[in-house]
Image (tube, rainbow over the protein chains, first blue to last red):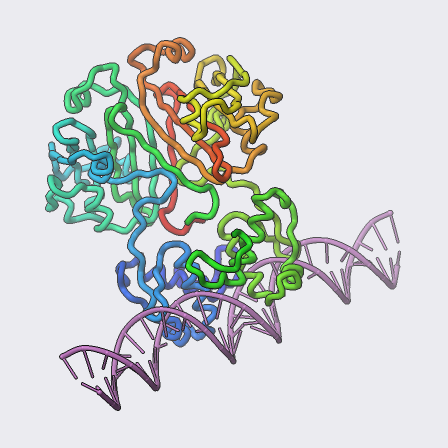
Length: 247
Length: 247
DNA sequence: GGCGTAAGTTTGTATATACCTGTATATACA
DNA sequence: TGTATATACAGGTATATACAAACTTACGCC
């Protein structure tokens, strides 16, 4: 269906659209990696049998979308994935702590392969019985407990997850590099910590926590579901953006 | 400087860019309001003395940015401001409550003109002594206190603010229509409610609250600074989006 | 008046062409 | 060996042209 020339409305897909989806398939499929140089406009003109202006439009629009990087005189390259999407500045914990002048350290509390029960399967939009990886860890700012991370990972999509050393790099940054992401969901809540959370974060019952749950998809499959719990007095989310003209 | 033909890099501004900024000046300056029909491609061809493809590119890019709406055979129109920017679904309280099947009601607790002291002036990025409007109100879901709203408004930019009936429509929706917005800032926190907040929201000391602070700008001036406080068990923020291809 | 058709307008797409600037590379020269 | 020059190639912009599709309007006919 991807290579179809018909849109869903059963109208012929414009040539520049065909070229765009073809290029995106190369990028999302992994045959063209970030930093790779892709064929020149004239190459694509010959390959697709269209005029250069049509190829130019496809490449220009993908560049505006942040998928490609063009350098006059040199070529067109696959852009690095865009980490912060601008509206809310949700970064990796270590970046957050570093940006506030702290020193990040992490501690893996458990890391294992599990079989999904109904509750966990629901989080991952899948069915019970699926193989998953489960990690629970703590992030510290210096010696202060800063964030609890409870994460499930789709074992089929990220088979090497168990082999990583998450005391140095965070799961977030590993997953960012290891799996392409097509969709992201965030849920932000304010909750009172439960008994375990109070213990691990050294909190009182009346200390509120900010909870950020994130799910990421690769096409129709959930890659990971993670729940971050941070003391409310240490962590907050902020973002500043222009409602139009995303640049 | 706006009508200059030179970019900051001292290179001539492309014709299609010149047309884009000209159109944006009309929109942001208010001479073309949302819903208005703007001149056709051929009108702009005559007006700017360029080819139709150049005008077409300018209009197409503004359409992709969400600033214009084009209807084949009919014309090009100024798009309505985009309320939800996609990454986090931050809507008006009444919409939120309605979306969750509740019934919104609000109660203005105070509404007055004030003169900014240093603390308030800092919130609005201005100086002490400036005239502001200050509203404090409660939003209910049926009879349950749902959100406290504490808002300052730039009196020069929104002179009619005091005359509105905020027991029917919310300040958010009034401001959305009354003032164009060029920039938005959000800060999200989890806090324990203070004495007043506990009283007005009918909470215990250990009930966490989600606080959303929003500031909006019109060019270099802060239009409004608002702090929303909601019980954590009633209110949460969520959003789902595609990291690339904003469509 | 009501209806259908034709003409005109408006946007959408595609092409061929032209000229510009910037980059890389091969070549000639000192 | 290092430097200058010529050349080819890359993308960036602009134009004139063409046809298609969606819509509006005017007009003629019944």
